[in-house]
Length: 215
Image 1 (cartoon, rainbow, N blue to C red):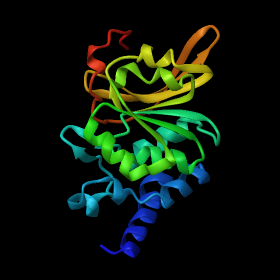
Image 2 (image 1 turned 135 degrees about the vertical axis):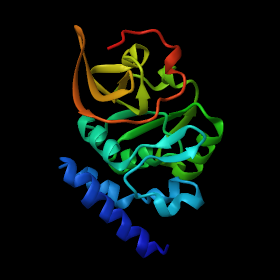
Image 3 (image 1 turned 45 degrees about the vertical axis):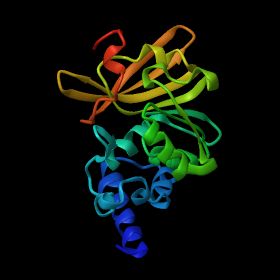
Image 4 (image 1 turned 120 degrees about the vertical axis):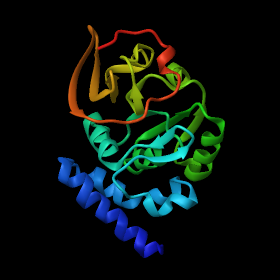
């Protein structure tokens, strides 16, 4: 495919998969039109980068499908200048979009190979760090937003502790195979949450070992 073909495919992705599913944030859709998703997938899969399915970038690791990614990002309410922890950022696509939204991005990846690819893809757009996903990255905490690039089987209490008061965590919580997008809000009195939409995405590694409250 030529660069023109990829641009056409990128615009079609936004118009047919994202905007048609109640993603109305024009700044977000503009960022998704600008970031070349094909650069963040294996070269052999560049032609399917804009399909409506997750793309496998390493064994068992995926870029979220465009719909789920866009809806979660809109749900987070991420604003310019806010600090975001991108958990399980893989090759860096989500971090690139957050950077295009003028956020301050820390991209956490547990797979050293994926982290190296993310660093090469992102340059100085984000701080790419390596460590267990469920532990977050306390060195740069607290965060305004924590974004989960995959599903978890329970509320990630360890990550919630790294939010600022008023901070938000968004991700998919999966119970018996059924995935629901949640937003968790931190306040002085604790945390509140609500379910926003249904989504099926791959489980992130490491979270099955973390004991927490199961929905």
